[in-house]
Structures are given as C-alpha cells and as structure tokens.
Image 1 (cartoon, rainbow, N blue to C red):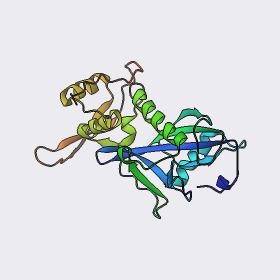
Image 2 (image 1 turned 120 degrees about the vertical axis):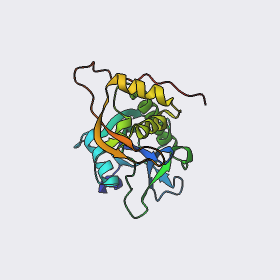
Image 3 (image 1 turned 90 degrees about the horizontal axis):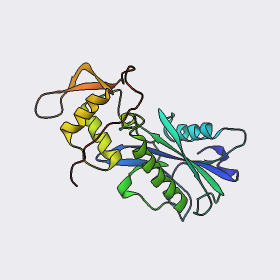
Image 4 (image 1 turned 45 degrees about the vertical axis):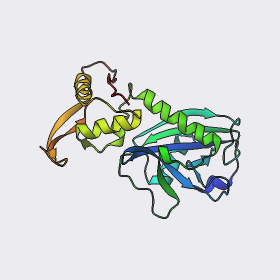
Length: 224
C-alpha cells in the first residue's frame, strides 16, 4: 500500500477487485500485519488533496500495476460496522480484472474465490457483498461480463463469465439468441480449439451504434 497508510484520516477508500478464477468469481485481498484480520480488501486513507476516484485508481495500481478498465463507486459505508483502520466512513469502489491476471509476486496480495474467503472486517465484508450485488444489477446496463475477458473470446467463454457473475447456470441456446438480439458482439476471422469437436470462432465486444443504448440481455436460467 502507499505511504499514506501511516496517516490517520476520517475516511478510507476500499477497492473490491474481481476476476474469474477457474469456476468461481474471485476477489483480491491484501495480507495485513493485524492479528484480528489476516486479510483485507485493498484500502488507503482518503486525502483532501486527491479525489476519491484518483485514490481508488492508485490503490489498484499499487495492487496490480495498472487501473482496470472498469472501476466504479459502490457507495459509502459508515461506522456501524468495524473497519481495519477504525475510520468513521469508507467509500467502496468495485473493479473488474481480466481472467488470468496475476497478483504481484511477494505474497502481499492473493486472489480468493468468493466461496472460500477468509474472515474480513465486518464493514469490508458488507462492502464486498454490496459490490457483488451491484455487479449483478449492472449487467443489464453495462458490458460488465466482457471486462473479465481478453479482447477476443469464444461465446462459451462469455457465457461462463455471465454465469460466474450471476451465480447461476444459463441455457446455452437461449443465451446465444439473446446475445444476437442485443447486438453486443461481432465475429472475428480467428478460431480456437476447445478440446474435442470443431474449433470455436472468436468474437469481440462491438455493440452496434444504430441500436438503442440499452445493453440488457434477457437470460433464461437453468434449474439449479
């Protein structure tokens, strides 16, 4: 974390960075020197000389070396729940990182699957839960799932990212019909082998400008 960590302030900026880890959504955690919370969301004290957005961007740069393409504010959380800094208020940001992004070498950061998280301070746990809820809500308005993918991908990979974010399985044929109706992707001239069978064509995110701004996809869930 930055050198400001040693300076006290009345509020913190906390960042929830998510990626795809095998078959689960994962979040980046920072190993702390605190005996109560061994792991925490990356955070830093706020500064009156720097905007909230710039502080959040700096935290992600400290953690991963760059700012993710998608980084948005989740909201503010008050002192009703404890934070590692004991600050009165925390402002949370959520970011999405392409699958395969490695944390810095050295052991200070690590990806944890959402279903296998260590104990977090109550306020940070609340921020994480709210961030995941926001991501799922935003999927109908923003290309959230595409932020977890490289520039080109197969439709199976895209469906997998939707399933990770939603926490539910999707009907393959219905997903592809809905994707086609939403005009969100275009095919490339590249193909990739996905094991047995014919190679799969690669696509890129390329919404048509002529269609309405709404980016929602009507999705049919499979029974759990």
